Image (cartoon, rainbow, N blue to C red; front, side, top):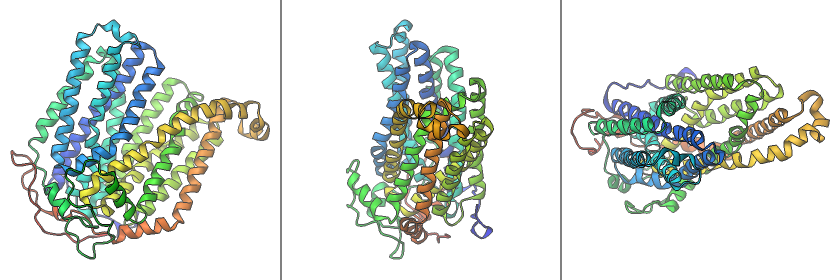
Length: 505
């Protein structure tokens, strides 16, 4: 991905603050695994009990809407409190809610859950989804912990490792949730979640996270992060002062995002990508099942999902080079190109090749975006900015998914069955429902490709690249400092060492 002159040092997860990061990464992976298992298992269980597509769709809708709605608030919690406290509180909140759900599940007659109109069912659904959402502060805190604990010249590799762990969690979740529901409904799911969450809290209680207190970080605000001097790079504008009680602070977060040249277009670009990606979310299963059986389709996606793990490992191994903004856009050029081309032929082979390329490239794009944000956003604001980006970006795909299904069914399918589209291109492209979906994919891929090429030629791209090059790495003093013992009864925070590391990018 980059020449040898851009190669970054490898991660050393055995010593210092990088070892602390490894502990936190594993903890986050295991907790995310059980939370997503609860979500997936709830979806399976609700459908098996009620046979209601409306109920299962509501589960997905609650998750997506709640994730988008709470991102900025969760980001504020991450910024205003010690990171280990956030991780522990998140796990304890999920555990408490799951315990309440377990009690409700045990005292409610089983036949009650077969009635889609029963209040007990919907109380259980809402509570379980609140428990899953309570785990989201951990996901927002994780990239800020990369900034805190990993030296700047290795953060791209650490972000790749985060992608690998996330991909592994999602792959295991899809299998584990089905097995547990088949074994005993939601009972084994909730028991497993409680055991894992309690074990995670006990584990993190012995992990020492070196971190300056939040009020010190706020007082030391600057454009390049704590300790940055006058040449630290772009200043996002005057901060609002110490704001430990400022809550969500949307205005200050928006002012900071606007103050970094090119950052708003970057978040907008990711939002647009997710908006287009919603078309694939809504239609990919229908298209794939028109080509192969449901058994083959399930096995195929299992294998394709594993390629996301491979992509994350490649990032951890190779890094992203010195120009992650450029790499982010080039990766999107490749991804949109293959998604535009594969539907031209009604073939499971072209579909598999295109999705394999897409799955391999996506960890590079995600790691590049995180690496850029970790560099240009002051550390004391990163939780809010990551939360803001999550809220904006994740709100797009569900919107498209809700719109594209009816649009395809009532406009594109007739267009490609016996309408003008069938008459114009049907002879070589094909007709019918599957080819209508393929046409939606081609148009979506072409739109994504055009927008990405325009972004590469835009002044905003050059501005953000310049911001990245000029910005002084935040919190390099903590990341490079000796961390002391990783495990032990010590306090959750300690003062920074004060030693600044020289930026290498």
